[in-house]
Length: 356
Image (cartoon, rainbow, N blue to C red; front, side):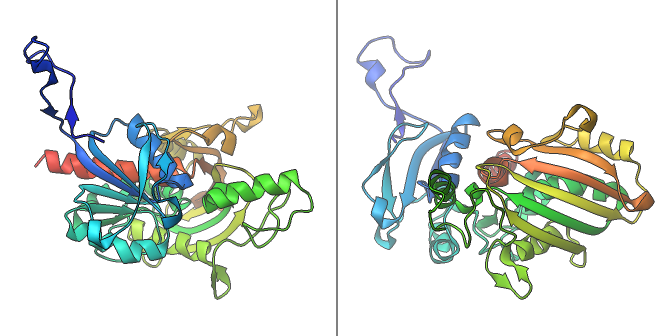
């Protein structure tokens, strides 16, 4: 994209030739690594929707995609391959690729002056890369040393729901069962579901078992008796809440929906909690939408969340006596679970820079 706008403003000469004088356009130089993936494509849409001022946009993908054009809300963009010899100077670089890419390339962009916002798990346990949900712990962002971590796509909605309740009632224990859509595994997960629905005899390729008309109670690599996804949910929640000893039990399940991660959550607090009081607290949390009228079939679903940025909460009810609550949470995992949260991190960094 050009750094110049050729549209004259009211302060420019009305003479035609003066209208052709290029005028420097304010904004940020932005890069997306993994732009051709599911989260990368969503990042492009969210950047456009939220009107982030961009004067230069660079998109990077694998060697197989180098030289191809990517259709985007900003128009066609040329996909580039990461190269040590041609490292551009950028202000923000969003990483929507895997752990190896983040480990090998993030610091290279930082050394060129960029702030990296990474979606992979690689930096999430690093003290120098704060793990941020802006509505929850945005105050921790100033600890970054050039890299900010974007949490797991189930942790973002879970923390959005639990943090305001923790501030009032003090968390003691969390039990969560997740229902995670195939888009959590990227485009390959979406393709796998489509292929298996079309062919009942198709062998599983995106997951360990067929996902069509099925659920798989295991996501990620083995971590003793827990899956990688379960370990991440517990560790990242503890870090964000600054509760290193918080008791958390999770079972993470892959389900055959396209978009939208759900969580059935049972929480125990140290103080007594009233359902109506908890409902009032959650109703006033930025980014939360309560859908909580089960008698009239009103509760969160993945279809309701798809394409939206809210964290939807419903089925709010008493659990475990006077100190327990149960609830169901859903969010679009590609948006608030990933891309929107990352763009909000950039907005937070921008706001802190402009207010100094």
